[in-house]
Length: 274
Image (cartoon, rainbow, N blue to C red; front, side):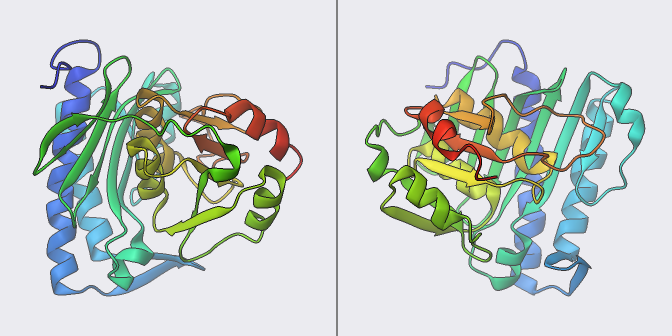
């Protein structure tokens, strides 16, 4: 039974889940048909699936929440958002490279930030049909063919045994320094940022470290609230929560997502590696 049917941000959480599913159906249609790939920049592909899913989500959000700002990966940035208290952050296809490679490791992500913090969001994995959703104070939940269940991060406390998630397509050379600093023995390749963070929220991994600059606000909004509500932690390297609705949407500093058990120790050990 899901006890989160009422309370603050409940409507926003449910709506994020609905539009993420709808966009996922669009993405799956293109996945079956094949797509033409364009390049926004070096190593930054975009497809018809990204564009159509983006347009659908943005149109639905603007109809449902006309007073809110929207920041979406495949839309022009309307800087009037900076004067709004509520901002929707949208990644219509997180893991486009994995989508093109047809390995299934991509997701749709929709989240709401209010007064610069993530408060509600959803991640949908189209190829499995699994939806993850959360809202501030309401817990994190998974929905799939098996029903609805509460999400919890892992309870692993042995730092050497932490399962470190790394990029499948562009593993940073700094990962070796992370492993050495923390004494880690295990790393597991995974596709999109959202999928990595979803694995953390489900308890299937324990740690993800990103060195900043490459991610944007839409990469982090939904995973941020999901991991926190599942009992984990997502902070920058100083230990501060990720702020949203910044002038520069790029992640300005390294960030760490973990099950929370040794989070502050991890930050101390990684200081200076960014």
